[in-house]
Length: 124
Image 1: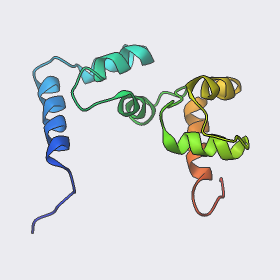
Image 2: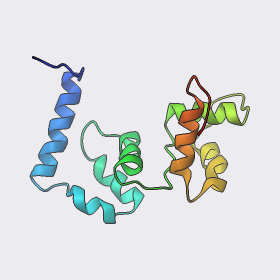
Image 3: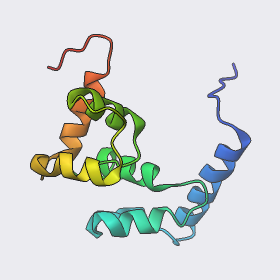
């Protein structure tokens, strides 16, 4: 039985590049836990196909960092716009200002922002 997972050839190329960098020691995934958020982002975006958003998701979900606000995440931006009744999607400076009171738990706040967009609109 053959399983298809819907990856484009470009994404496959990016995954191979990341895998190669990990296997040849150019990226030491285990040591990233000791890096600051910005150092992790800087290290990961060196890999073709990985951008800031991907690195921020790695910080939140893999390294379990509690204070990451994904500035370019459309879902978080839409949820903030709705929550604060903003006339347009917030830009990065607005997101930082809005999220300042949520420190040091902005990752957790982001999870609630995403949840607020679900069809059930229940947070629990």
